Image 1 (cartoon, rainbow, N blue to C red):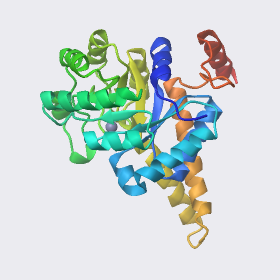
Image 2: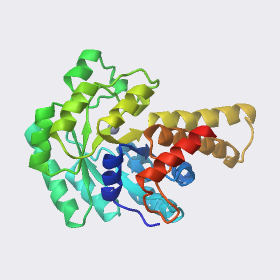
Image 3: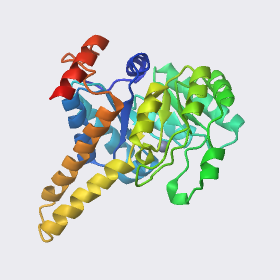
Image 4: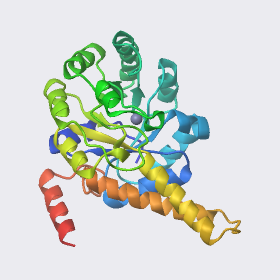
Length: 306
Ligand SMILES: [Zn+2]
């Protein structure tokens, strides 16, 4: 089906307490892995491109690949800009056909973050495209962060309420203890803070840096309002592991498809695993619509017995 906006998908996720996986891509193989996994799991899915992905693949390729991938499956696919750095880039993505945007002004002073987010929201809403914003900072593990720094950068619940009122942003990335690009899942989220934010803010909340978070903490976060979960590092690790293994096995094989197809399979397996963890599996029926909540529970129960 054609790309969709996240509006209906978020409504369902909020009402039924599951989260949609938002998977980062840099090339065709990763896009294929994600849509195939989503199709097999009957899950709605975000496919997102970061600044690095846009520099690597180019905006036109990134958008083109995801549009084609979406057209080949019958589950909802959302094309999302991850960490849009400025107003201009958001406009470029809007023109390229993205169905979901993000403006990340989290490193800027509050007033400036509000002002630019508001401008992006105003222009995106003209053509019905929702915007994710960020308040508080999800830091980068490559920068070597301490626990104190992570805590100091967390989202303030009262400020979050004001931020959403002032900007009209449709979803909010919150800093509750996760860190970008972590290589193992060790972090625990500040669930009390998440609950406090949820009590004051009524838009879907987004978790970045999920690769470094323990599974139980992820499940608890979904119970308390996280509706979109970004996954990048965990997939990148699988891609490289697949390449490394086949190159070790066949170091002189020039047909690179033999290496890339292993990498693609590894990514696909991890996407399926995350979709199940987030509870977005079995949500979409054969017509591409959402199944009723009762049917979902039955499907999940039956799945557990297999
Ligand atoms: Zn992020």
